Length: 243
Image 1: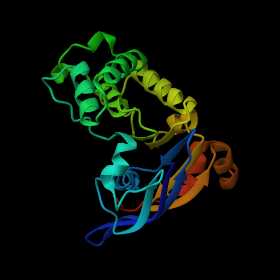
Image 2 (image 1 turned 60 degrees about the horizontal axis):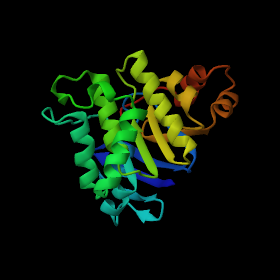
Image 3 (image 1 turned 90 degrees about the horizontal axis):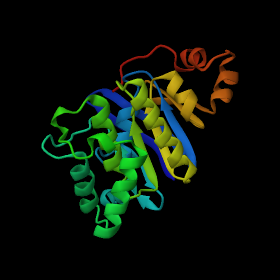
């Protein structure tokens, strides 16, 4: 479970995040939905310890992220908005390397690596160097890398952005698989179709604040509209500067 309470983060005079709170339970895909610049990525970066909040608290299971960021990171698998692959390493070498960094025992690491290669459909590129990979291939390797230590909590920052249809379907299936294993999945996006297809709970963020939350049906009912897209436009309102 991930719990964020009253998070604030400013850059100069601009508040990128201004009082964001949400809870992401196990066995649920929780979506952070908002326009570009709404504060989604900044919120996630604070959750996984890349940024320190100006104020507020974050807990990953029983671990305080501000007090013990390394301890919290051991409980997290993170797919950020930048894959950051080493061009001379193969897919298999990336997964193995990050498993070693996470302290996964060697015999268990090989089993997990082969399972991830199967689930994420990396067989055709498992032993190719990453330097020539497409955007979709890089994303899938980065996702496998994020999951190799078998984390209970997974953060995905716009994981299907720029992917083709087949890669998008593969990532969606992985997310559904993680949910079936009772993992906590937090999924950031501004794509309505993605959020509607995958998320059980949706937190709408605009101008650095949470403006609504609930299931897709509850948000539609709250807005008085008939589609999630129309509901989002009503609930988010005019988008000012944030991130």
